[in-house]
Image 1: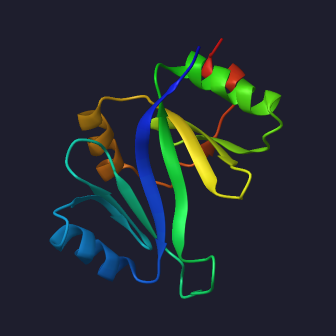
Image 2: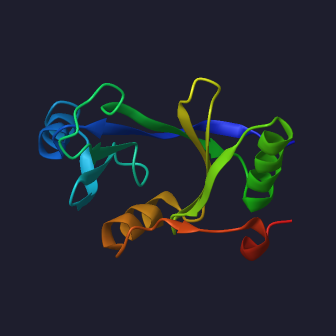
Length: 152
């Protein structure tokens, strides 16, 4: 049976990415693996990112700042991700998206209280993932299907 192995990363929506990035770098010792307009991907050094910081673009309203999503790493590969995806569907969970980030493939959905969750499989080693994230061009947010991905 497919299982979740650990928390992979957390995404936070912040009012000022520069200030947040400096805090996580200077106060917590994290490194920036990728910086874009409105986003920073921070790591403690062993994986592509532990915390993602995303700008709310000045829209500081209740519910707009804070937790973006919690990402959970699936033990195994695409087969196990597909099995968990099917389990979510079997339990009446509405899937928000199937997303290919290049270094991971992910399933996004909400828990009963509306908290966004992501389950994903890594497609690269941690070092290759860090390098990919730093060198990536574009958003890396492409849709996929399990049929296209070759999962069975």
